[in-house]
Amino acid sequence: MVSFRFPFSFSQPSLPRPPRATSSSRFSVSAVAVTVTIGAAAAGAAVAASRNPRHQILDWVFSSHRSSLLPWGSMTLADSSSESVVEPKTGSSFPATIGDSRRLLGVGLRKKSVLGLKNIDVYAFGIYADCDDVKKLVGEKYASLAASELRGNKAFIDHLMEADIKMTIRLQIVYGKLNIRSVRNAFQESVGNRLKKFGGLDNNELLQSFTSLFKDEYKIPRSSIIDLTQEPGHVLSVAIEGNHVGSVKSQLLCRSILDLYIGEEPFDKNAREDFLDNLASLAVHK
Picture 1 (cartoon, rainbow, N blue to C red):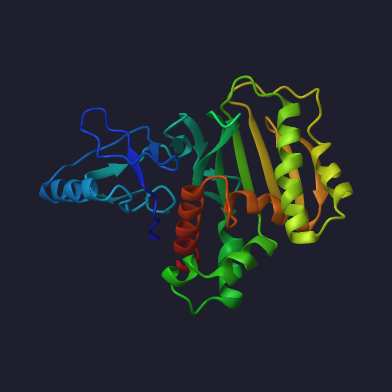
Picture 2 (picture 1 turned 90 degrees about the horizontal axis):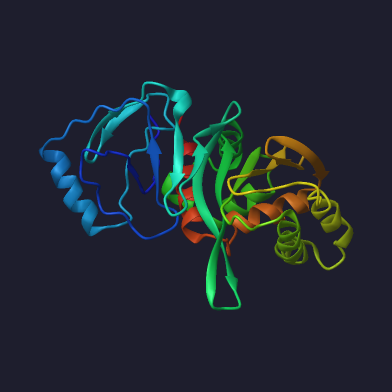
């Protein structure tokens, strides 16, 4: 069974919750039926967790075996279709899987400073990657590396963002007053900067082909979903509330989008760390 490094807590109303860090990347998993068994080992693990807010837990959600011994108990999932992960600060819920084999490997929060006085929670996001594609990439060039070596391997991370791997960045709107024009303008700035970083200055046409997909007619109230998916062939596909609104074929654009979330200067550093930890664990699991 593959184990993941996800600092999260499970919802247990009848039991005291373990200490939770203040980072926006901490989240909890909800289940339909839960069986909890507490013993002496659980008490010891709870003490250890309280001393280290970024404690490591076996993540059974992504395993084919739907149960495992957790630091404070044992849980079994009765209905796998109910699996979801919650970003704790906003309460935004993300499915553990999308499609056939894209798994959730990290969640985070996009904040925006207003006049340098206040940070607004704009949207929560989940980072998904195709299991088979990741394992194939690692097998081709990095099979000799252990998970701990992959996590900090810059060449691997750069290769990952350039590789033809199916990945999805799912955005869930948190700020109720956000409109599609604001989203378009924000991407104009952030994606535009990444296009300059990786491709030089002459990419205005490519940037326009992407931002033009966010038309004024689309409404995005709170909890709306926007999916940015890298399809095979480096095709960036955009969907709003499950409706496909357009695609752009460009490796440069795909890399620029991914860099916002898993690059060296991401929107949420803890989300990036969780993603890389879990990706490495997934990649080396046979």
